[in-house]
Amino acid sequence: MRVGLDFSAGVAQPAGIGRYVRELARELADLLGRDLVLWYGRTPSHPAGTPPPTATPRALPLSETDLMRLWYRFRFPLPVDLVTGAVDLVHGPNFLVPPARVPRLVTIHDLSFLLVPELGHPRLVRFLSNTVPRMLREVGAVITVSEAVRDDLLRLYRIAPNRVFAIPHGVSSRFSPVPEDERRAVLASFGLRDPYVIAVGTIEPRKGYPVLIRAIELAAIQLPDLQLVVVGSTGWLAEPIEAALLEAERRGRLVRFRSIGDRTLATLYSGAAAFVTASYHEGFNLPLLEAMACAAPVIATDLPAHREVAGDAALFVPVDAPHELAEAILSVLMNGSLRERLSRTARERAQLFTWRRSAERHVEVYRQFARSS
Image (cartoon, rainbow, N blue to C red; front, side):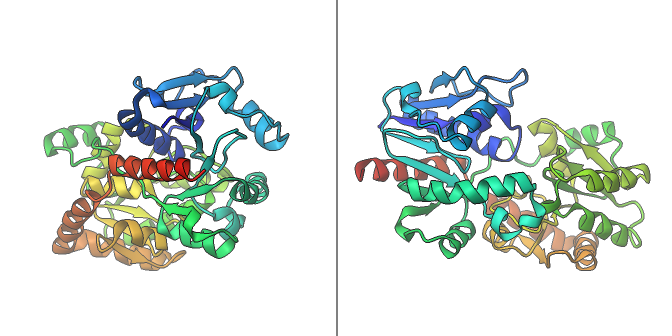
């Protein structure tokens, strides 16, 4: 079986879907070798990643933006398998998949553009609202990143359940508890003090950063030295959020990182008193799983995807509730036995999620799909 996979996000996006595509491609290349064909647009000057050496790369002369316009805005019917060469199916891992003369499948990461459209960029909301239904009609199978997204998809679109497969993400072995001596040296170099909590994700309205900042201020009434570490690049509709982050940074309450390596991120997770997410909506939340793998206690908004990933390894709080979030932060930081239980359970649960298992389940769907077409 020869599979064509869109690797564009793996080249262009440092985090989020880009990480999913890189990790999935790495494991698929181990399973399929040269029978995995990775196509992507013209490589940017600072690529976020490169195709694994055991796969077959197909770099296209157009940029990712040009390909998006060609295939999805102008609907130019150029089959991608003319570029990839002969394949048995093609997989679009980022909401979209181009025309092809072979079976196609697509990954849907969340339906935030329908469920919380007010928190997304209007142009992207319009694009996905118009394009995703067409993708769902045209493809033979759909992969979702969680059962929560699968449930949303079946509830909001008329699609046969036997065409939709929930396959969760994995967590890289790069994310594991960092030894204390190494951790202390790195944290000291950043001027971090104990205790701190960490939040990771693009700076955009869906992530709930203003709620988190308010919760930190409330918790700091009892823990004056409390700091918030935020790791994330600037996203859409971010100006007021960035202003709030900057003000907290000026007061010494926040330390901000826009882009860091995985080892540094694992160190920050490992040293944190808790990982906290105040998101309004998630399809999976990969940073939450990475933090769990580093044995960080987790505090998360009570979302179906968060419960699916964290299970009993987290404290859950209502969405948009800074006082409840502050109380949860204080509970974890001031109760050593609770913190220890959450830390231990988090690491144990994270071991259930591996990229190899995720890739193997993708291959199962590929084989089923290719045989039935």
